[in-house]
Length: 278
Image (tube, rainbow, N blue to C red; front, side, top):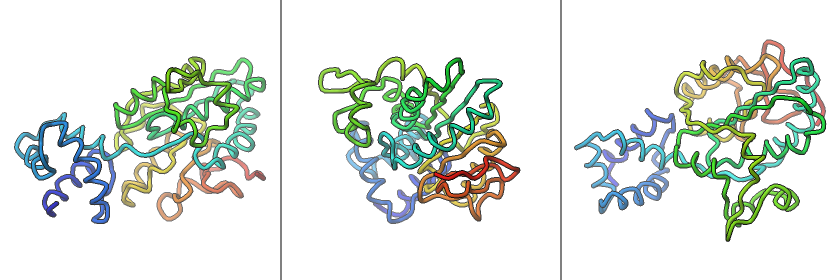
């Protein structure tokens, strides 16, 4: 691929999603866009680039962006954040929200839905402690294609074997042919909708917990700061923000502070959740 075509695709993806493609990611670009080119009857990425220049077709630009921003995910990814949520964050929120009995959770860049469904299963297991509560889990992604898969809640044997404890598979899934579908009661706990993190987030309302994991690593520093400041504006002062293990707010956004002893979890610098042992 020549440098002009790489620059073209890189600019499209950066402007529309915030994802920064560096030179060493040529392999990723090729692996994601060659199938797209072929579906459109084009023989090469050079031909795809020429099609973009010739038509500037909005649908094609969206397809390129979606192809490049579909990221890997699996149930209970990295395990520890979900344990922190269950044992540290949730008990504090149950106590502090006892009067209104309401909890809102946002999972950003949810891909095919394993993260929000993991949270839903966890909350289902804690149902006895939250009788009468109104719980909303909002899951968003840039890609409409992955959101459709997430809504169906239908996963392959390979997908359910990655991170999902066997007891939860047996309890919350039904086998459909060679696939596994998550129970309708779990699906009903999650609302999926498209959302671009580069857009204004102000109309989403306030959240008690935000999972924005393994997303910021793809952004440049300025975009990271913009997204984090927007998240801070819609997160309750005593809410919790979960980032990926390789991500941090330090040196990027001073609106958050780490929750002591809880790696990858942050709260508002205004006060926030008190430090708690894991």
